Length: 380
Image (cartoon, rainbow, N blue to C red; front, side, top):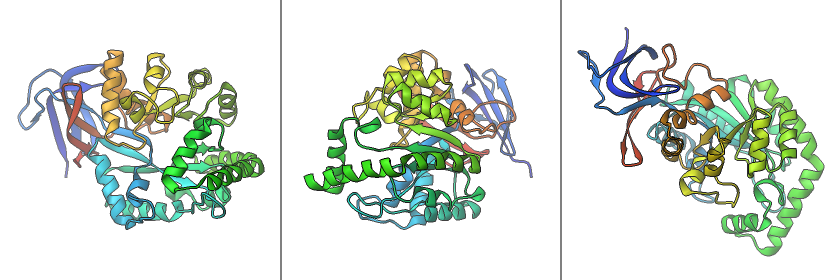
């Protein structure tokens, strides 16, 4: 049976413009886009609200927050995943790359254990049972400073929908934690480390980097190729680090920490991802470069909600205001991340694409989400 939905009298956020018109959805695809204010019989009158592509989230730690809502509190996984999925749908995210850490330190200070393989299995089981509202892929965050990285990566295969792999290097004294005092505040606050505990933790991470770092980096590149996944870097700080990223075939740079690194990324054809919370708050909580500064310099391509799902649409609207171009702002959370991740079937209001859509209106400068559809089916 054919399923149709006609949304009329809307402001359509097209790839390069915003126009008044209507969009017709048939069997989960965008069938037609027309201009004008008319409301045909049977159509939904959107009353001038915006209709835009569903948001595409490449890097979010939100699932981990649901799995462990407090330190040492482990929540039932299926319930946590369903809550995470519903929360994202309710913020306009229709495609998510769930970030899961691979690479553990089961020994010494700052221990953390593996979890990604079991979690991914449970997530794929929910997907197979059609229990999820939105589209889920995996983003494996590969911790170079770990003991078990390559063994954990080897546990994943084609059925796991791994589409993004990022190289994470949290060696103290560089990248995100060039200022070790910031890492010290974080570790003492989250893990109640003493001064001696923290010093031992720093020494342990540096020793792991010296012993395994190069082999881990090469192994991650090889495993990403096996998955057919896009490679991303994380927290590039210098042009030299970006050049190394480019030599690995990296196409995405998550949260570069300096203007120098972001500019080098563009020189190498690497798309720059910055965090929506950074943009909304007006700066980085780690003291690194502000997303707004990169946006003003034309060095920001994609926005990620990171740890606040509701920030994604808000940040896109704010970028649209900053640039005087809402379509360009919305593209940072729709068209550009879709293209960067190799998802050619979504991210644009274009006939033939997936009918993943959002409807929102503005309350002052704040977007108020009204409805969300995934393949033409309303999910929020």
